[in-house]
Image: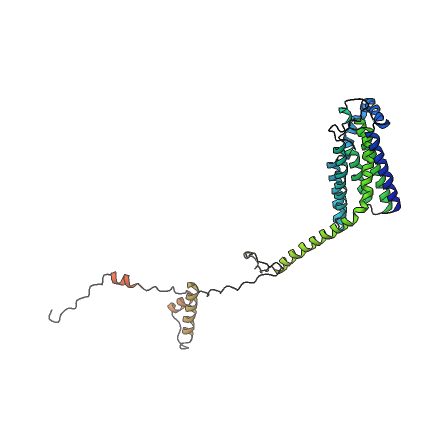
Amino acid sequence: MSRTRLALFGGTSVFYLAIVVAVLASTWLVLLDWKVMLFRPYQQWPEWHAFLDSFVVLGQRGPTAVMVAAWLGWRSWRQHTVRPLLVLGVSLLLLNATVGAVKIGLGRLGPHYGTQIGSAELFAGGDIFPSGHTANAVVTWGILAYLATTPITRRYLSALSATVSLGVGLTTVYLGTHWLSDVLLGWAAGLLILLALPWCEPLIGRAEVWLLARRDRVRERWRARRRHSPSLPVAAGGPRPALVAQRVRPDGAPITTPAATAAPARETVGAVGTRSGAAQAGSAGSGSAGARPGAGDRLSQTIPQPARVERSAVAQAGATPAPASRRPSAGG
């Protein structure tokens, strides 16, 4: 971290502690909060209420996190790195841990729930000090400037994030949802998180290396399975073979199994008849040169004869024998 960043971090930390002490001691800052609240800006300029009520969404954590995460996800895909998403995740974790802890610890009530004029309204079960909208706007939109790759882009994005966070903070004061001191502390809290991100870079780098190594390992396993899977040829117009799952050892090598013994091929009846007809034709051709095959021979050559089925012994035994013809006797 550079000396300039260290000086900014130290000055912002002093400013943060000064605001907390001023509110705890109920100093002039608390009186200023009440004066602004009783002025009721939303009643002084009601024509801005509809626009600013929509503009304050730029400070809500859910919508802004989704928009910025979508942009950084596209950028991570283009650059083949997960660092932008990791930086966003770390910054949001720091935001929830620091701002959330102070909110719950101090328990300040909002302007609409004030009970006594001039009171700091601390330790009353509230959760508005510091302003979460303001701190979230500083961190979420400031991440874009933090991850900028060129100095010109960083300057433009820094100006954009400062404008959005300033507008969101003042809008919450206009709507009466936060005290002015809440907004001041929210700006300081968000800036401290952005200034502390360089100290988290070694952790982010190790996390990125681990994630990329896991991704490459999964890719290699998937390619190994594709490489060892059998590729069966498919005839044109024929049925596609069914794929059978192949078992693989933990190291990625396939487990081979002994091939099944092929069953002996069987010939069909039509094939036997065709072959016998071809044999008869060959025997007829090997006869005398002058002999011509008759019509019956030609028919047997062209049409395969069906296989003859012998009558079973049971059928022969059950059949009634024909009566023998009597011959006339010599003397008859």
